[in-house]
Image: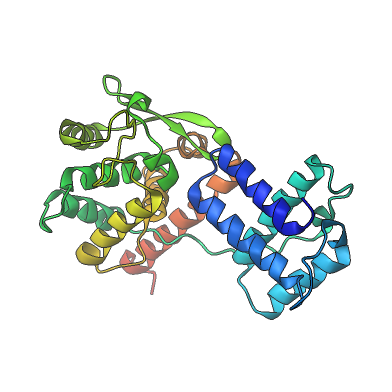
Length: 299
């Protein structure tokens, strides 16, 4: 290997061997291609890893600011670059990880948009009515029941295998970020929907996936997103609802009904409690909205 493109290819291959989600792999590839393109003038050879010093990286980050990218996007690009630098350090290509010396843009303080309990239940109940002549309505309902009923990430949902389900005790073994596993219970509605789907599930030989596509292979995260988006548009008239919206709703509604943060943290698979605490802000915002709307002294 001689230039950044070669090392980038090796880095992405390593991530693929580590079973990083296709979504993350795709984003890292795009972000690193953009970094390499920025440092490669037209007609010039690709920059060498050793040339990526602090000044060069600050110049690159300054260009992102100039182009008015959102802080969340810049944070993601910098995270991809830092992971790439760690890989090159392990390979002995670099002796100093200059990416660690670059200040991370502040995280945006946007609260996740969360539908109310009534809106979410209307959506899930609408899926159960099976009014769109979909090819696998029982599968679609099971997807919604597990996303909302268990707070799964879409990658965790499509990554479920048959052996991960304890159908007697109603527990799921979920593989989350960083290969971390956790146990998540599922309730009666999810159990009924899951059993109905498993009774008619078709799959290719030796395919262990719980959720399969029309070819009998594992349903992709893109496929699951498309299913959620379809129902959200036609039942709620809201194309902004996606699988993670249901995860946000799961956490926010649990908190509103009295669940403690530590329990929600465990169920979501958050490594840090501070990540879970954002849902307290969402719950308080909703509470103030109810107060403003209902209390006679609010106006």
